[in-house]
Length: 415
Image 1: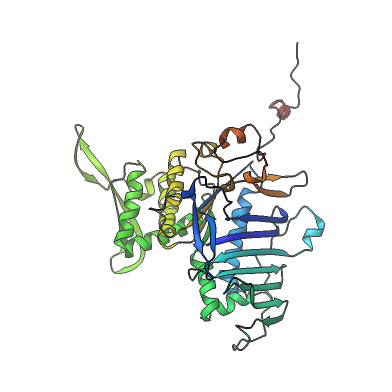
Image 2: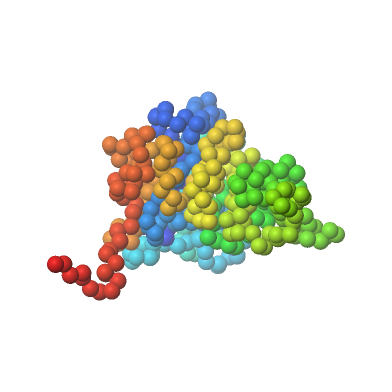
């Protein structure tokens, strides 16, 4: 589970963008918070969900892109050949100084063994300039390794292990050894591969990738197939049953979903029909299957899911339902975490969030994004009508739209 995450000089983030799942001392909405016990017995209060609002092109999506690039860099770093450019280097482009500066990712996280880790990478287009991993076995920070360009030093725990000190300049040390089965580094490497997911509902390729993962899980696990069926049923899209089948009965390489609806005659249900194919389902139904299925997997096994544009093709009530799955203990026993961006203002109503769960993005006159929370405002307290305050401009994060007359280049005459 994630504690803190930050990135600097990445896309629209000229300086440091810092996000935190740490919960403040408020007792409001205790169901939205869980308590993690660290390896030294200390308690840490963390949020289950967070939502990000902002104007179009304000940088909301780049928060998601930052998580996605960080995860992909760790997972795919071993695939880079010597001399390859690092594809996840995307500096802020509107200031010349940033074009010459490195990008930096930092994360604090907990593994299932209750150990806290801090991991940092700093890199340019061609090389990793700094990479450092620390852990807290007894509550105190201990170095595991630190890399400065091609030089690497090890902390006490790794000092006598048989590491090759020669590193490839564009590949992460964590990824190289994590991918080779090193006991501690592999656990961290696999955590980022399997327990951190980020993407956008607008990326058809990613949705198909997630749909394939959900299909495989449902085919192999009938209990999970029943869960995804129940999700579609309670969402009121009229699907009664779903069945996962192989495309070829003899070569189970591809899977597909067969959906069943009630068939009626003279207003009476007489059977179920599978005549409406999956290809003819709405975009919202397909999105619910892929995103909802991925959510169910996270809710079962734990992890962090970061979604851009959750409200795309989904009704407000359905978004609220999916959000509640993460915020209710009975449906989220593994304390999975959800971050999502949206323009769906009604979600801010009904006293659903604490102030430390609500975030905003805004661009300045130079095109740089800032990320801030509702709790950064002195006069904001839990329980206020966040939706009305946001619409009234209290928090910023709204578009400043000129008059429609601006488009046509004239000013309306007044009497």
